[in-house]
Length: 323
Ligand SMILES: Nc1nc2c(ncn2[C@@H]2O[C@H](COP(=O)(O)OP(=O)(O)OP(=O)(O)O)[C@@H](O)[C@H]2O)c(=O)[nH]1
Ligand SMILES: [Mg+2]
Image (tube, rainbow, N blue to C red):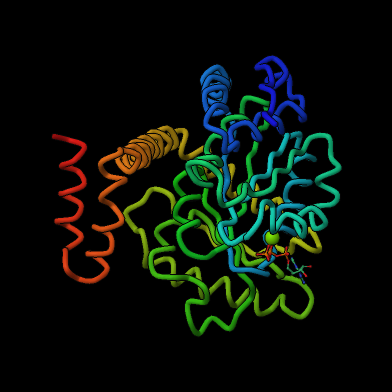
C-alpha cells in the first residue's frame, strides 16, 4: 500500500507520527511515491538547516547506542529536541540493528523530545545515504535541534555519514594504544572529535593513557585546519563527562559559525550530493535504454572473460545512448 503523503503542516508542527510517515514516504521503493516525496521535501526546505548534525561512528560494541541514549538524554536536559537516525549498511533486513538499539535506547525512545528512526533497508531506492540525507531535512523541518546519526565504523558508510554532518565523532574504547586501534588510514582526516568511551571502573586509568596517546598521535595530523580535533573520555553507561563532549561540540559550532566554515561545509556537501544524484540517475537511465538492455549481458560477459576492456565496453554503451 502507498504511504499517504503527510502534510507539511503536520510535519512542521512537530508531530512525530507525521515525521515517521514522511520518512517512510522518502524511503518508499515505489517510483510513484518519489514525486510526492520530492514535493514534500521541497516544501519543507525553508524549514531546514537550523539543526546541528552530528555523526557518531565506531567499531561494533564500542558503545554507540548506549552513548546516544545517554547523550540524547543529556541534550534533552539542556532543552534540546533530539532526532536519531542510523546508517547501517550491514543490516541484512529493514531495521536489522535497531532491534538492539530500541532496547538500548529505551529511555530516550520514551522521551517526548526524542525521535528515533531505524536504518532503512538496503534495497531502498537511491541508496541508504540518499534517504538519510532526506530524513535529516525532514527531522529539521519537524523542529529537531540536534540530529545524531549512528554508523558502524566499517567501510564506506563512515565516509558517507561524514558527507552529511557538521561534526563527525569517532567513539573508541580504552586501549593500550600500541597501534592506532581502529583508526584506519584516512579516518583521522574525517574526525572532528574522538571520544574514548567506557572510561569507568577499572578502565579509567587506561582511558586516560589512551587519551594522551591519541592526543599526541592527532597533533601530527591536520595542522593546517582551524579546528583541532579534540580527544575526550566519557562513560556512556555511567553518564559521566557527557557535558564535556557537548561543550566541545558547542565550541566547534561557535568557531565554525564565526569562520563561516559550517556554511562552506554544508555547501560542499550539497554539491557532492548533487553530483552523486546526477551520476546515479544517469546510470539508471542508460541501463534502462532498450538498446543497452539488449547488448549489456553480452558486453558484461566479454569484459568478465577478458575479451573486452571495461573502457571499450563503457564507450560502446555510452555510444548507444549519446549518439
Ligand atoms: N563499562 C561500560 N560499558 C559500556 C559503556 N557504553 C556501552 N557499554 C557496553 O558495551 C556494550 C556495547 O554497547 P552498544 O551501545 O550496544 O555498542 P554499539 O557500538 O552500539 O554496538 P553495535 O550497534 O553493535 O555496533 C554493551 O554491553 C554496553 O552496556 C560504558 O560507558 N562503560
Ligand atoms: Mg548500536
